[in-house]
Figure 1 (cartoon, protein in one colour):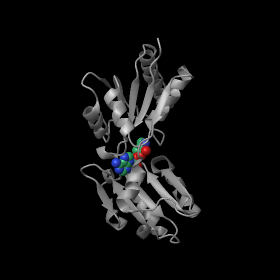
Figure 2: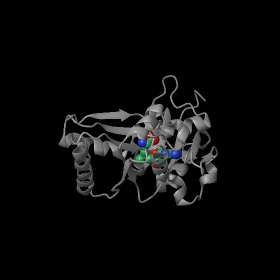
Figure 3: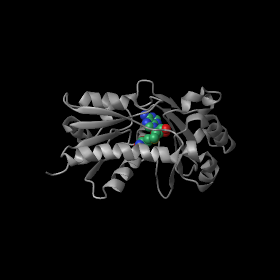
Length: 241
Ligand SMILES: C[S@@+](CC[C@H](N)C(=O)[O-])C[C@H]1O[C@@H](n2cnc3c(N)ncnc32)[C@H](O)[C@@H]1O
């Protein structure tokens, strides 16, 4: 019997119309769909998208993000999920795993892909790219991400806040993701570097409570939760503005 294929499907940043035709087709056809769930429940819309497109007979499994800081526990969690998926693939069933945005950009799907390949190096996989959140945020604000010779730096601020000043010094465009509780610190640093007027803030792009701020001064003293599911785009040079 032929084994099934593992599909890592990017479902875009939140607007259901920003999904690829291939993602929609595969969700409709998949007999088994894994949906990552987070205790922050910022991704409930991912589950909504799956419920919209999945066939009635599809088996939908929630898989916890396992956000703990214990590296070994996280690895064991993904190894266990991988081993469940492999047993389904070996029965000839296709398995899909959905990812917010693109599956290969700061996505939990990367851990799962590694775990699958560790247990079965030749595991049949197909990765379906999705529209990344930063691309949607740029489109919503008409913000040119890469232009001319300018470099583009994507920074996961939650873990790399200390690298922000050196990224600013490097120049070009900065894309700050995973902002969370660092929002105030970031706004202060942008003010210190005279970059407030060259930055835009977009939260929950494409979702009903989307928020866009082109004047980041209004974020001084904002509720700490405002930085969740948000992106800041910064032009550090004025040459191309
Ligand atoms: C775990 S990463 C996932 C990134 C995703 N794989 C992608 O390609 O965009 C989560 C981060 O993506 C950003 N993000 C995802 N969806 C977003 C949205 N709808 N609006 C704004 N930012 C979003 C936020 O910075 C959030 O902290």
